[in-house]
Image (cartoon, rainbow, N blue to C red):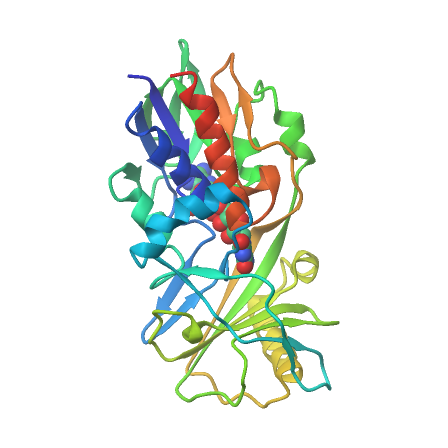
Amino acid sequence: MTKIAIIGAGLSGLVVAERLHQLADVETFEKSRGVGGRMATRYADPFQFDHGAQYFTVRRHRFRDFLQLYLKGGVVAEWPLRMAMLEEGQAPEPMDTDHVRYVGVPKMNALAKALAEDKTVHLQTRVEAVVPNGDGWQLVSDDGRDLGRFDWVVTAIPSPQASAILPDGFVHQNDIARVEMSGNFTLMLGFDTDLPIDWDGARTRYSSIGWIAVNSAKPGREAGTSIVIQSTNEWADEFLEEDKDKITAHLREEAEKLMGVTLPQPVHTAIHRWRYAAVQTPVGEPFLADEKQRLAACGDWCLEGKVEGGFESGMALADYLEERL
Ligand SMILES: Cc1cc2nc3c(=O)[nH]c(=O)nc-3n(C[C@H](O)[C@H](O)[C@H](O)COP(=O)(O)OP(=O)(O)OC[C@H]3O[C@@H](n4cnc5c(N)ncnc54)[C@H](O)[C@@H]3O)c2cc1C
């Protein structure tokens, strides 16, 4: 059987694994303790925060069809949220929601977890190098371990990380270099009391904050009142190396101005910096493959920086590889 290594157990990598695991010998390598990548959740008992993707939408039939099984199984659910537009000095404006929004249940990475269930996924294994070995590739971890020899290597990680791992001879290095990704700061606040607000998710105008969500209002989250505050990507890029306490103070103060309330003292506060959160300039192709060298790259940065973009990229690469097995 052809041996395929997938680097990254976010949605795009796991979709490739799901499609190919019965046709090839597939192993997935993931640097974190769990799967899901940017579809991420953090616990701080009793609070729970989706600190990456907030929800996802479905625009194309393939993603819609794929999700049916998981909707039926309760792994994914609609989030019928009350949306608002926030602007400093103005009352929150209720917003019409033009499309259905979905979330993983009971946390954002539930879909990735379901996909990973019957696959070989090596957690806490950061791939550092892809080294030529005869007509294949040897994978080496950051702590110098030999992770095995593979016929095909697929990266399913953000573009700057893919560029660093893929050998210089990968024919699409210049295409990857053209991709632009931007950062995000996510502030997580847990309260032991309800908040005096009548919306569940809010977009903003004229602010360094782009999104505020009542995470505890999502389906399946019974934990205490948990609020997720996400900066705009532009603001995050400007202050990416700034002291995290200063970022925390700024976002909290800004959130109070937008929400028009004085927030009670949170019983839990945490901040997360995403260096590669959003895609500003995608490749414009569903995936990048080098057939001669048997190297390929997929991920949301190929098409669009959304959950559905990651899914479409993984599916398209799986179509391509399936024909070559
Ligand atoms: C703050 C934020 C808000 C977002 N909001 C939304 C939203 O509301 N709606 C929406 O649709 N999308 C949203 N997104 C985007 C969405 O999360 C992504 O488009 C999608 O999850 C990308 O999936 P992926 O598989 O391409 O990459 P990722 O999810 O990034 O998966 C890559 C995986 O590779 C692993 N990895 C990286 N390097 C290595 C290595 N060297 N070795 C081993 N493993 C490695 C990482 O740990 C990660 O698990 C948001 C993202 C962020 C960060």
